[in-house]
Length: 297
Image 1: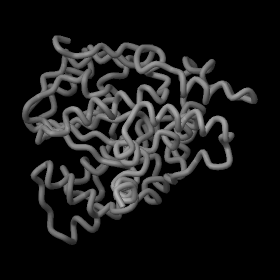
Image 2 (image 1 turned 135 degrees about the vertical axis):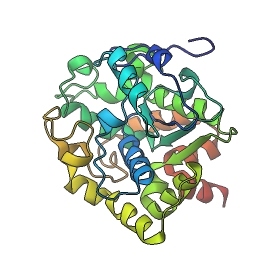
Image 3 (image 1 turned 120 degrees about the vertical axis):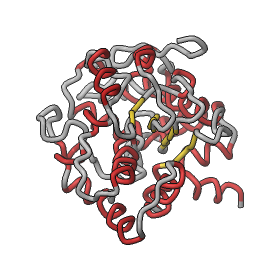
């Protein structure tokens, strides 16, 4: 853990990375939850294999290292035994990850409110009761959103994904984005230009495929296809871990909070975002490249 920030919660423990021997060609997808992690891992899996029919099996072949519900010795042994190019998942901010000079770190972000509302639904779909007080089913008093706004970035709060944790993710990634092996992507940009996303990731990974193959891979990774084949693409899909594999892929849309949050809640969110980030960074974190372009006009 030398030189790394500790992130320890009921669900995750970034000290587990101490047991991973990072290789120069590793790919580490590091994101806040519900920001496109599975989507990006699927893109990486398709590009690494060049096979539109590849069985991604993300939870086994591209494991979430931080999660505490699996014995780390088993995860480490499985990773060490892999002879192919590896991809791993993390929900730890970049200041808590071991930073190799050659391995590729791909950080994906999404509008914080979209991520929050997607996380609300996700927690209803998985057998993890730890966050029931933060995310009560009957929430007439707005407890969930208040805790989203006032929660801290680390520990129990961090695993419950309040706004402060998302901001910590963003700032830690942005502080390292000048490195050639640290890249930042946005969910909105992936939605807007999936072909361009594939091309950019392929370039980062130094991978090339014939144009007709790339077109097939892009079609496989489209949201509608992944949702229609949720048992194949959802982490742990087909195992019964989630109540519904299909519901893991919610709607893939933006603006989930519209008509749900009150004016007072939106105002409180705006005030916090303005205190956390300058306008140009806020524009990118919320809306990606298009948001930044609009802000700069």
